[in-house]
Amino acid sequence: MRDATEGGTVELVAEFTALPGHEDEVEALLADLAVAVRAEPGCLVFDSYAVTAPPPVAEEAAAPAPDGRRFVVVESYRDTEAFEAHLGQPHGAVFNAALGPLIAEPTGSVLRFLRPVR
Image (tube, rainbow, N blue to C red; front, top):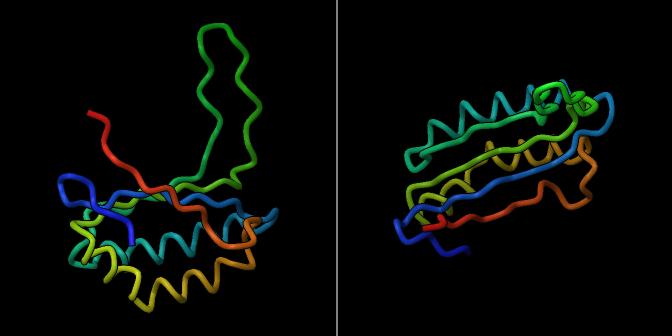
């Protein structure tokens, strides 16, 4: 288990890449999961994003638009116990089982645990 930050919270980012043609399915799965996770008593933040092209900067041409296949989920839990409870929720297992065949990462989403920079 990851240590909580000094404030006691557990902060992380999950990232994964939808296989071509499965972007809409992944978005729908994330939308359903968000409702369930946000209802967990220890969840402070659960926000999901599809990566997009940056906006054009003064007279520079915009970077080519990505195909919308990369997803990032920002999560925050009250403490280690809340995060452990989150991991034990059945909706997480259902989501991960459905997501697995739809993404490029062979072992599932890549988790990056965070700590505040002071």
